[in-house]
Length: 207
Length: 195
Image (cartoon, rainbow over all chains, first blue to last red; front, side, top):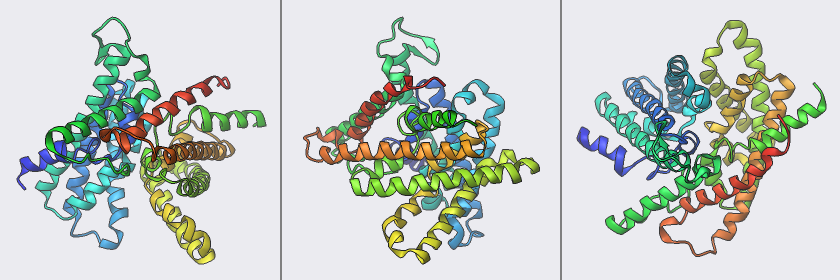
C-alpha cells in the first residue's frame, strides 16, 4: 500500500470511531465542545504516531512472548509525555479532561495498531499508519464536538453562532450518547445507501 | 473518618458519578458484554473485586514507594504495570486454587488488564488524595455502580433483540441511544446528597 492509501485507510476505510467502533469512551467524554475534541484528537494523534514508530523501531528486539506488556509500556511512556506537556501548556482544558488524557493509555485502538501493523512493518509505513488512524480519530471527535457544541451551546470553538441554546441536553452527559448513536447510525445509513455496505458496527460488539 | 462521610462517598461513586453514565468510562466492556445477562453478572463480580483490590494495592504503592522516591509523574506507567501484574497473578492463582471459578470468570479477567475503568480508579484516588479507607470505598462504589449499569443494560438489550429497529441503527447505534436515555434517568440522582 502506498503512503496515501495508508492515510486514507485510517481516515475513511477503518475510521476508529465510526467504522471500527474502537475507543468510544473519549469520543463521548470530551466532545462537548469542538476545542476539547480537537485537543484530545491531537493528543491521540501524537501518541498513536509515536507509539507506532517506537514499536516499529524496536520490533526486532521485543520477544514475542512479552510483546503486549512491552507495547503497553511504550504507549504509557508516550502518554506520560503528552500528559505532562498538556498539563503545562493548555491548563484550562487539562483541568477538564486530564483524566481522559491519562486514560489514552487504555485505548484499544493504539494497542491494536501496534500489534496489527507496527510490529510487522518498517518505520515509515508505521508512521503513516499512525498518522492516518490518529487523523481519523481526530476528525471523528471534531465532527461529534461540532454537533454537540452547536446544538448545546449555540457556539463553535467558544464563539457564539446562534443566540439561543437549541438543545441544551447535547452538552450534558446523556447528550454525548445520543450524538454518537445518531451519527453512527447516519454513517451506517450512508454506507448502506450509497456504497452497498452492511453497516460496520452492526454486530454490536467492538471495544 | 466518620461512617456517614464514607457512605456519601460510596453513593457518589456508584450513583451520582456513575462511571458509565456520567464519566463515560468502560464503554468498550459495557457495550461488549451486555448482550447476555449471565455474562454481565459474571463481569460485574470480576470487575468489582479487581477494582477494590487494585485501588488498595495502588494506594499502598503510591504512598510508600512512589511518593518517597518522587516518582509521582510515572503514575500511568506504574499503575498499568501493577494492574497488569495483579490480573496475571490472579489468573494463575485462580486456575490452580479454584478451577471451577476460573472456568466461570477467567475469560473476563483477560479482558480487564487494559481497561480504562480499572485504571481510572487509582488515578482518581491520587487526584483526589483519598486515604486508604476512602480509596477502597471509592473502588467498591465505582464497581457497584458499574455493575448496576451493566445489569440494567443487559436486561434492556435482551428485550431489544426482539424489537424492530431500522437497519442502519441496529447494534451499536441503538445501544448508544439507549444508554443516553438511562444516563438521563441517572441525572435524577445528582440531587441525592450535597457534596
